[in-house]
Length: 172
Image 1 (spheres, rainbow, N blue to C red):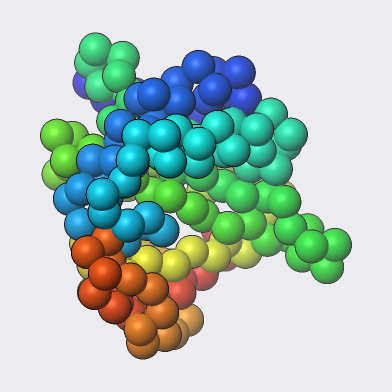
Image 2 (cartoon, rainbow, N blue to C red):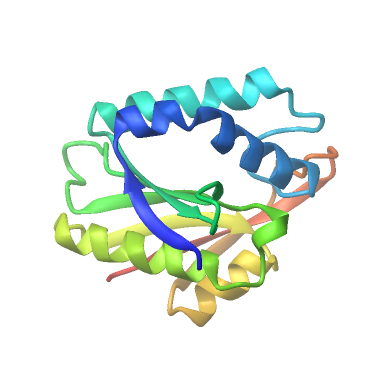
């Protein structure tokens, strides 16, 4: 059974190699998550070290899915470091599920756990973006996220092809 839990900064730093492996797998599989192919191990690890620093500083919350062996197989972040005029808002970032663990409800469980934490923190508006028409966009819509709009050619897929991005919001 896969478990979902929140990591503190020290745990996140200790799990950088596993987190980097999930990120590399997603990019290798074609996910547009801010990185290009080939994604070097050092680049992925550096990203996760910065995330761990943000967790330790209270700027974000990091949730992971762990498989039966205790290995990280999914991630999701709640970014709470917002401008002064947006204390009620948070960004949802880096929904990643390793290809070996997909189609098991992990993304939905990560998102529901994150939303519960956001409510506990007093966040009333959540925002995220994803590739238009992706599996993730279908998940967000099924779970009640509202589509705010699309921006054509907003980002690149890991292979360099342009893609449209859809923004979503939710009032949990």
